[in-house]
Image (tube, rainbow, N blue to C red):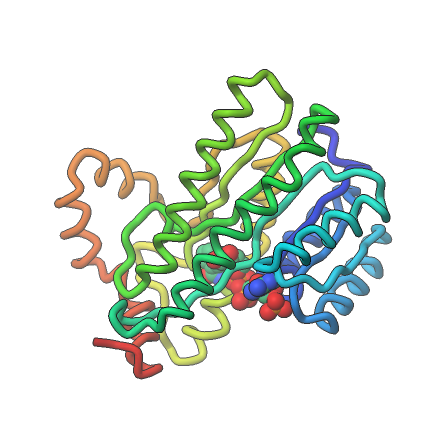
Length: 280
Ligand SMILES: NC(=O)c1ccc[n+]([C@@H]2O[C@H](COP(=O)([O-])OP(=O)(O)OC[C@H]3O[C@@H](n4cnc5c(N)ncnc54)[C@H](OP(=O)(O)O)[C@@H]3O)[C@@H](O)[C@H]2O)c1
């Protein structure tokens, strides 16, 4: 979708982590923003800092994305403030590395609710507005864990694989129904500086395996912009040639499995789970 200037975007998970640079990058492109997350104070701080550095029109709407009434309120507040919605960035997400049998049922349900059900529900709510104006883009922030099987991350991996599959299907429905509305999925690997890996794994010395490396939060933000402007189906954010691994996996799942174990793809999740007493 081009041009981006003057368009309106909702960014979930914008109180901290990767959502903040994503929102900042959109604002720098002249996009007006609604920021959503549960932490009202952090959300206001993000909004204020984006306004101060870009002059953008930014609305902060404290939202628990798992709550249907809060989803409605988020859409309604955005329409009331800006009159339209053009872009939805489903970025809010949670993770808990753990041995799967030790994951509490309510943790599993919360992972499914935040990482998968909420993005799907928000997309469903936003879509009629995008289709009516024949313009708009939905970006779902998944993960490399949505393309590879990462040990000790069953619930996270399931939701992120779900988000990849949902986006592919949604995008194809748009393509075959002759609308200018579209959808993309962005799959980051480990992100340094801010976010869940930087906050929970790095302080304990659990470093990303060499084969995956790390990327900057700004690289995720740039991937989001690229996805919207170039209508990219799927953008991987990684400092390593991860697509080669994925191609190998398409040809031989067993070979990929062996390689992933040998290269220690699971090391961050495993070490984080163990250090939190959540290992096997
Ligand atoms: N960091 C990485 O290395 C990495 C790698 C691959 C993919 N990702 C993906 O990138 C996205 C952002 O992750 P991050 O690293 O920035 O994580 P983060 O620093 O933990 O931030 C998560 C964001 O989601 C929000 N959130 C959580 N539960 C919510 C709920 N019920 N309702 C509304 N907002 C909620 C949080 O805000 P509140 O707590 O204020 O609600 C926060 O703004 C996630 O989807 C994650 O899976 C991250």
